[in-house]
Amino acid sequence: MNDRRDFLRLAAAASLTRLLADAEPALAGERVAHAFAAGNPESVYAALGLPALATSTAIVIQAPDVAENGAQVPLEVTVRLPRVQRILLIAEGNRFPLLADIRLGERSKPWLEAKVKLAESSRIRVIAEADGRLLTATRDVRVIVGGCLPG
Amino acid sequence: MQNDAIRLRATVDEQGALIKALLTHPMESGFRKNASGESATAHYITDITLRINDETVLTLLTGSGIAANPLFGWRIASVRSGDSVTVVWRDNLGKTQSKTINAQ
Image (cartoon, rainbow over all chains, first blue to last red):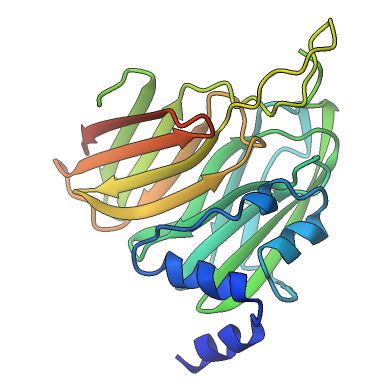
């Protein structure tokens, strides 16, 4: 409980407080539209009102080292921590880096698979909120054909 | 609203259920240009909800960086064979689709 309060104090940005309030217990997360339109990773974090992140080996990102087709890159994310409430998927090289903002209920295991687009070879970043702490891990993926080509 | 454009599978094991969802959607970002230089209209799923027996267990807010015809896998605890599993999505043009199955 104390951790949670400390975290909320840390997250002085009103937007995050509102997001967290919305995320529990109804999971009816309010979409921060400008976060999905943010042009670089730093502005995604700012738009979501996230404080500084700690790197963690408890977040495991499985993805191909080399993706032939950037339009369909399989990702598998496992967070080996209790009480994971939220997972963010970010492709740092994309024009809009925020791929997904996932709110997990108590019955959701901190694991997911998804197929994403990568515009170019870039770093995939996962941010997890577990028990009020924000942790992050990255994985680099080399892309042969980008996922945002004219079509 | 039932829809064959969503393929949904929920397999019960000792840890709960493994749920796989394959959605049919262009996930068009809106900044691709065709040969004549015209941009396609942005058209992508903005949120996906997973419900077990009418309890919302997972919500995903998504952007255009999710691949076309999105494929997701999730794991949910305490799911029994026969429980109802529902996926609902909504896109930026206000369109929505859902599908309900029973966990196997």
